[in-house]
Image 1 (cartoon, rainbow, N blue to C red):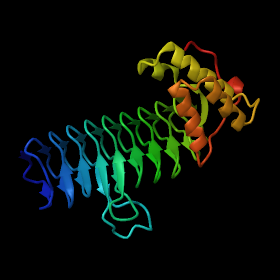
Image 2 (cartoon, helix red, strand yellow; image 1 turned 45 degrees about the vertical axis):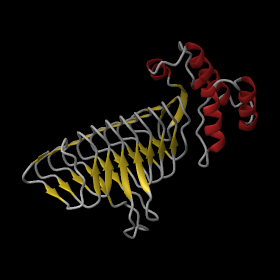
Image 3 (tube, rainbow, N blue to C red; image 1 turned 30 degrees about the horizontal axis):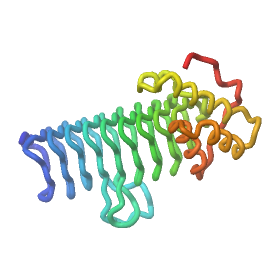
Image 4 (cartoon, rainbow, N blue to C red; image 1 turned 90 degrees about the horizontal axis):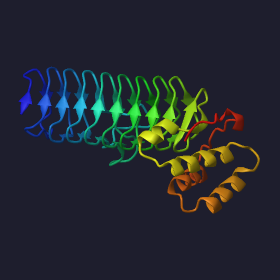
Length: 267
């Protein structure tokens, strides 16, 4: 175990011998580290679990109390998955609410400098937060989503899987899976074509997703009629059904752009 002599470690912290703890690191109460975790100089951890092979860079702050005035010291925590990269000045708060509540981050996530994950959020595997991307409490970020730099998201917003959102965007409503979004508010602009290609989505699947979004954004029918038609036409396409179910389950609603905002491009 490589622990720098200037590090401060709580007595009940669990740190495997394979971990590396840098100078001036503070590991407070109720911290459990996985194998091969590396915590670089001046980082601060408390009330958290960190998965194997995760790297935490200087001045990151993990598991600190939520920025929620209702929080009264309940026993909550933040749980970070395996193989994550948490860069400088990132903040990931533990949950608010009753004892046992968690803020959860999946595996292979990248948090660039000064990004923020608030209390009770769920961030699924392989999500990327660019510099200063900030999500409010109780947000849900889908697998492989990319949040652009300085983008911000209201409490309880859901961001679908494999979404890409441009920098300096802002959202108070949900953003469905597989799409591109941009602006203040962040409005959908068709499918994340390049991202879906890179993730191995077949040409047929990409076309179906694109056609689904053209219908959703056409404004020729009510959303109820659109979703019914998509269910009938693409009942066997699990990706289109994910879009349908995401919209049906939305509590905050979704933004729609005009149909002619969808630029024809190769799928």
